[in-house]
Length: 97
Ligand SMILES: [Zn+2]
Image (cartoon, rainbow, N blue to C red; front, side):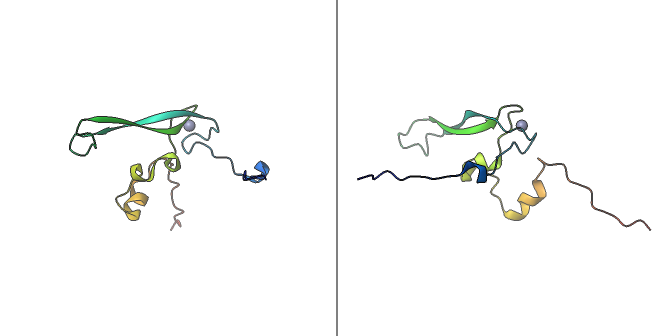
């Protein structure tokens, strides 16, 4: 009996994830460090919680998709669009008069 799930993934069909800041495609495993205040810590004491994620090997940027959902900019979708500053905004075409 072979209970192991076989994942037959054709990586040629997989998209490369690149740094959204510089376009580099290699990443280092890094850790975000969260400080848990004594008020909310289950132990009643301050706790440091490491959260593993990945940072661009070239520039250190961490793509939004690598962040835990709770750490993404969560205010609202509308403010997300307004505050997106990681990519240079292309000026809109203005018809010259
Ligand atoms: Zn980068």
